[in-house]
Length: 128
Image (cartoon, rainbow, N blue to C red; front, side, top):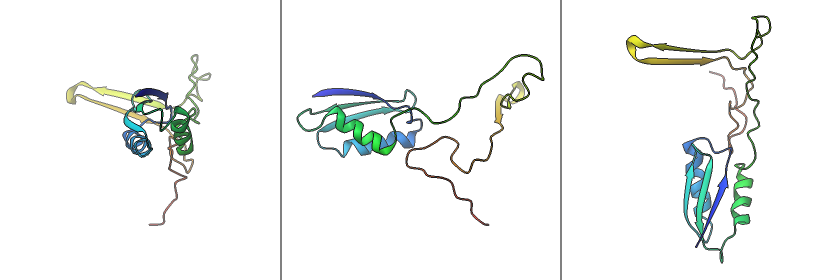
């Protein structure tokens, strides 16, 4: 038995954990898979006589889980209001009376998922 650990930056939700586990457990020689969307990592116990790390990586690459997220990071500038007018809008409010925290962010409509999701293509608008 051998333990393989692979970082998966594009595995960020529980639906990805389920997909990664089922995809890898279907390979012969994969005995157990632990996947964490919180830590973006997968650990598998394999039989090296039946499957290799390259086989696991090929399967994960084909499904789109390897590589960096193709999304711009928010860049914040400090300074005067004129210097910071193109900062991303974000507003957070904590209300002590009702023990609630609220968060909003302005996002442009790009006709795609906000976070690129392996296995999910462009969103289609529907007429109501």
